Image 1 (cartoon, helix red, strand yellow):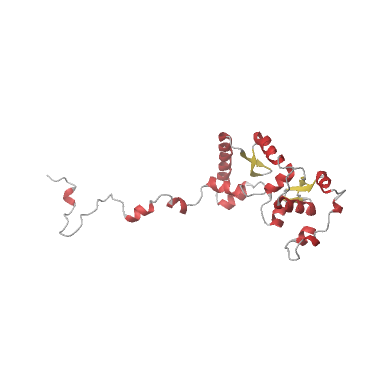
Image 2 (cartoon, helix red, strand yellow):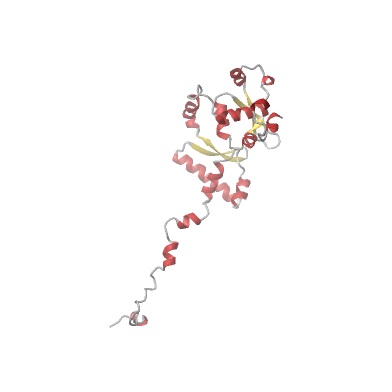
Length: 222
């Protein structure tokens, strides 16, 4: 005896293919389920968005700024930041996420300081890279100057180079900008010693050493 379900399924006519079961996936359904396709079209997660932004910042970023950029409530941003910080600590990562000076930023973990110091100091005798020389010149001629200002003049992020120059003793912190509270940097006595100068007034004029069409030269020498 045919089952009750089979009574509702019409028999195929001659030359016709049998009907597909109702639960068989359609071609469009199979294409939509292609591996990775949905992930490529979806927006990044909140955690991923926060990590991407914090990897490129020069200064600690306030929660309200992150909330505006990611279009999420500030409380949700604050909770996500603390979740990331706790996750990095639990996993024993070499970096952590800290709330400093009213904002959030990545820092190398304190327990890794000896390793980082050895890495930087092992290259003390090596010549400075082009990026380090450019950054050092900006600090020397514009001091005291913030990281953001250095990056704006160079046109690239200079955060890592500034940390290297600081660890090498060529530049140091010189207080905070009264308007934006950004950390300011200046050259050190060791910088003068290495260049054989008595004071900054003996720095040479930059104009003869740079192309006439170099943008920003006026800013650098002011």
